[in-house]
Amino acid sequence: MSLSSRHLIGLFGVPKDDIQNILDTAVTFREVLERPIKRVPTLQGKTIVNLFFESSTRTRISFELAQKRLSADVINFSASTSSTKKGETFKDTVRNIEAMKVDMIVVRHESSGVPQFLTRISKANIINAGDGRHEHPTQGLLDMFSIREKLGKLDGLKVCIIGDIAHSRVALSNIYGLKTMGAQVSLCGPPTMIPRGIEMLGVKIYHDINKAIAENDVLNILRIQLERDAGTTIPSLREYHNYFGVTSERLEKYNPNILILHPGPINRGVEISSEVADGPYQIILDQVTNGVAVRMAVLYLLGTMN
Ligand code: CP
Image 1 (cartoon, rainbow, N blue to C red):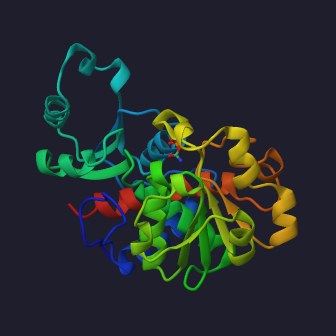
Image 2: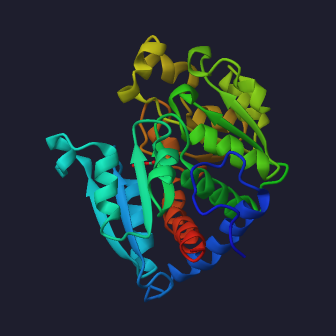
């Protein structure tokens, strides 16, 4: 079964059947990753370029590994070592790369809207690997996959996203995807980190972390994005930790059954204590493993549509 779009720009408006299809396909690829030979010939002959204009560890390596596991030819573009440093525009850069006959482009950019723009100037399938504060759809998908793997369902679950919502692209992808799959989504953080009017997306807002922990099945913790000036919206990181830091004391007292997710990178001692980051409540590294399978599913489903 193919997807309803040949690009993955965000989870906004993506039909439930498409999300279900990606998550179910990822289960098969998750099994491939456990085999001694972790490679299938599915995308043999396809050329994929990874355009990263912003730093990344998990997403960049995960996409590259997923592409190699599917036997695609992979090209990695890093803005810091490219001719953009000599003044070449983004559009010219893409046109030159496209002239080398690439089939798919995975793009991360600090500006919201760049993946959408690429769909207008390129014939390749475009996959958003995170654009500004907009969306990070494969992170949303891998979070849903990991929750479903651990708790067996998404429909009816109560999922709270806590932290720097205002600067987050992970939050929006989680909200759109989880709501489509029938989960009840809420947000928690200081008022300065919750965008005004976001409750119009049908999410409940908490400013009391203890209540958020007590009333939810899953807590997805976001980091404070200091590189995007998040530090100016709170008095200090210590103050943030005191009021909104997820600690084992809080989890034990208010909800010892809660499941903890974090997309990474984590700021230990700020939004999450080391004890929680390494402890029994969390599935942070499972998310990373699952990310490869989920990206294999997205690449396979889009790459075989052409
Ligand atoms: N979760 C995530 O997007 O991490 P990276 O920025 O390291 O890719």
